[in-house]
Length: 170
Image 1 (cartoon, one colour):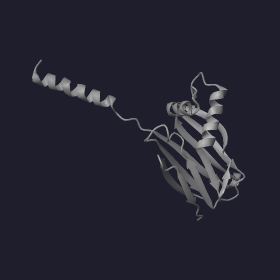
Image 2 (cartoon, one colour):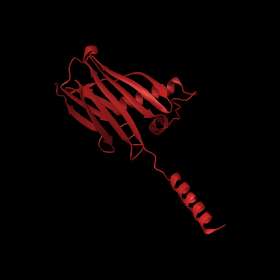
Image 3 (cartoon, helix red, strand yellow):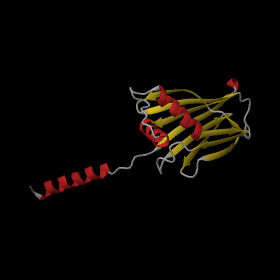
Image 4 (cartoon, helix red, strand yellow):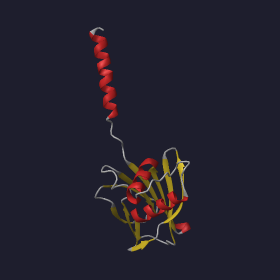
């Protein structure tokens, strides 16, 4: 082999090896909307299926198969319990129950639908979301809010997983 061919294969080899060390990106997205005409807050969470199953396994010491053909009713019950523990909401200083509605799978993402009912108005909104934060040190939970047509974004990481939001109405 000549020098150019050897250099080419060495370069390809190094690039291939470095791609195996690529760092996985750990992120979940939560959309939170206040819908005054329905008197409720709607939360849509998008969480990678493998990360969510890993978090459930770590917390409850059981193997779950959310999003797979072997998914069980118990897997969904464990998901509900996990979300109830890790997503907490207070509106105007009072903790509110976050109700699990349903979930669906889109490729390798679990989409979860939650709601908080009987909300006539919101002056302040506090959310605690530490889902998956104890599983991965670089996990990010991106929170997108829409209250009274005011949109904001927040990123929850590691020690930063509570946000007090003061609502302004235009």
